[in-house]
Length: 221
Image (tube, rainbow, N blue to C red; front, side, top):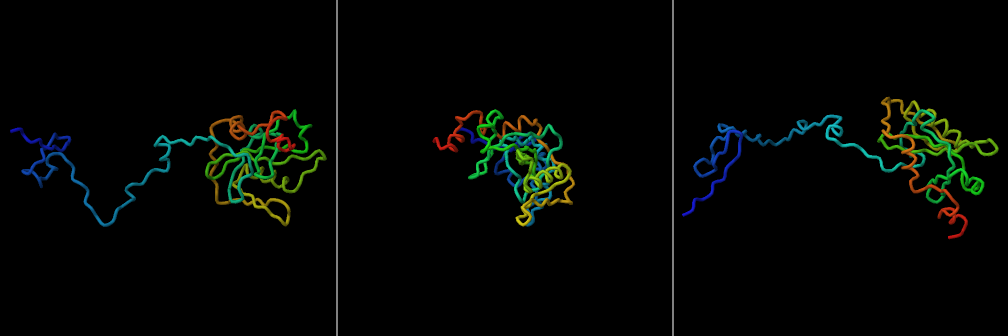
């Protein structure tokens, strides 16, 4: 008759056969730790993780998309200081969906009524989302509307403070709300401004008049 196999419990001290003869045996004497007692209350504080848990765990946020639009009205943000983080560019904005397109300068004469020079400011939100904020530059008459004036003022203030924009319809300009309780510095992405531009306008660059957006505006398609 073949011998019936024996189930073993592995421990540092070796292997203890599990059989009818040793059921109920104190396994701690064989080097096997005792199970934690079951209680009515589970102390979850024992499972606290450090504040830099994501870093320790090897998790890193990869930015694959950068919005080219104004920060949301309920979003606190900071603007990155330095001319190398700004760009004066021709921008065409679609009124229906608010999408912004980057227009190459040689098309300005042809598209003067459709696009406008804007400053692209680099900003980051409290949640760590980076974006490019297009703000109108003065027109050919040198004048700038109150909305754009207040937006430039907000961008300058946001270089030092966390702010958010609130539209003041009565004044026809933005109110700048500063978060005096937020004193931490923003965490900026590790790549350069060229990378931000390429992510923001990767599929929205108008380089010639055959672009579908231009043809649509001209009623050709």
